[in-house]
Amino acid sequence: MKTKTQALAAIAVATALAATYATTTLTSASADSNSGSDKPVHVEVFAPSEGDNAGISGAGWFVDLDVDFDGSTLAQTGFTGLQLTGPAAHNNIAPFPGTFSTGRDDRMPGLVVLTSTTNNTLPGFSGPGTNLANLFNLTGVTNRDSQGTELWDTWIVGAPIAGKNVDTTLTVAVIADLNHNGIYDDAPNVITDQNGDRRIDRRDLKAIGVASNIETVTFHLNGDPA
Image (cartoon, rainbow, N blue to C red; front, side, top):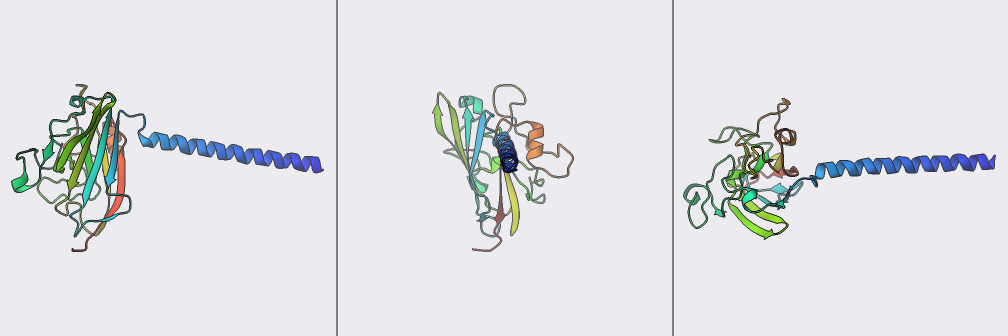
C-alpha cells in the first residue's frame, strides 16, 4: 500500500511539474510574440510611463521615444532631417525646420503615434485614428553604426488634444515598407478601422502592417490646473 501511495504521489508531482512547464512555455512564447523581437525596428517609449498622472489641465505632458532601426542606414529609416519645431511662430523655421501638424511626420515618415481619446473637434484632428507623429517637436540621431540607426523623438503636448481628467492609451509603432521602396516612409495620416470593431488600436496597425513592435502605454491625463 505504501509503495502504491508513493507511486501515485510521484505521478501527481510529475503531472504538476509538466503543467507548470507547459504554462511557462506558453506564457514565454506569448510574451516573445508580443515583444516584436523578430521585427527590424524596435520602439521604446520613455514617457509617459504606465499609470502616470501626466500634465496640467490635459496639456503639458511629454511623449519621449527611441526608435532603433536594426541594420538600416539613416536614409532607409525615412529620416529627412533634424527638427526643432512647434506651433505658430515656431513652425518650420531655422535652424532645424520641420512642419507642425497632425498626420505623417515629415522627418520620420514611417512613425505612427495615436491616443485612444484624441478629439475630433479641433481642426486637423479626426479622433483616435489621427496620426499625431507630425506634432513632435524634436527629432535627432542618437546613434549610427554598422548595426543600424537610432533616432530619438520628443513631443511636449501644448493643448488638451486627448482630453483632460481621463485615462488614455498611447500607441506607437513604425509602419512596414508597404510600397517596397526600401524606406520606412509609409505611415498614413489617419488610421482607419481595419477590422470593423469600431475602435482604433494596435489591431488596426497590425492589419496595415508594422515593421516594429507596437508599444502601448495607458496613463491618466491630469485635469487639474497648475
